[in-house]
Length: 142
Image (cartoon, rainbow, N blue to C red; front, top):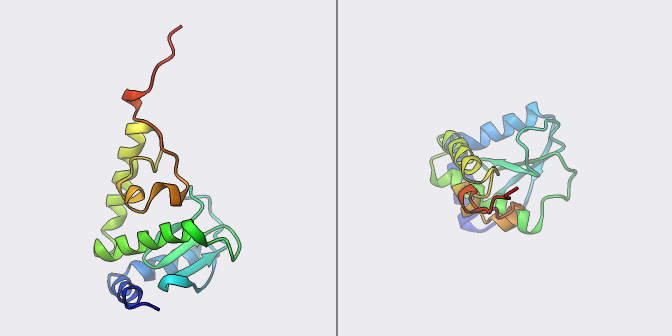
C-alpha cells in the first residue's frame, strides 16, 4: 500500500470517521473486508438510505451490492471521499456534506450535481448527472 493511503487510513481512525463507518456497516448488515487503496469494503448494506450506489464514511465504502461491485471509476470516486474525511478532520464532514446536498438540491434538484464534495470527487466517476441550474433551464411556454 502506498504511504499516502496508509497515512489516510491512520488519520481516519484517529478522527473516528472509520470507526463510525464500520458501525454503520454493521448496523446495516453489511459484510466487511479489506479492499484496495487502503479502504474497507462493506457489501450487502440493507437500507435504502442514503440513496447512492455506494457511500463512504472514513475509509469504509458501503454498498448494497455484492462483492466485486466496487471497482474502476466508482472506487476512485469513493477513495476521494475517504481523503476528504482525512482533510476535514473526520466527523465535521458529515454536517457540511448534508449542507452541500441541500445547496445542490436547491440549485438544480439533484443531490450531487452542485454538491462541492461530489464535484471534488469527480461527478462522472460517481455516476452523477450534470444538470444545469434551475435559473438556466428553458421553461416551456404554453
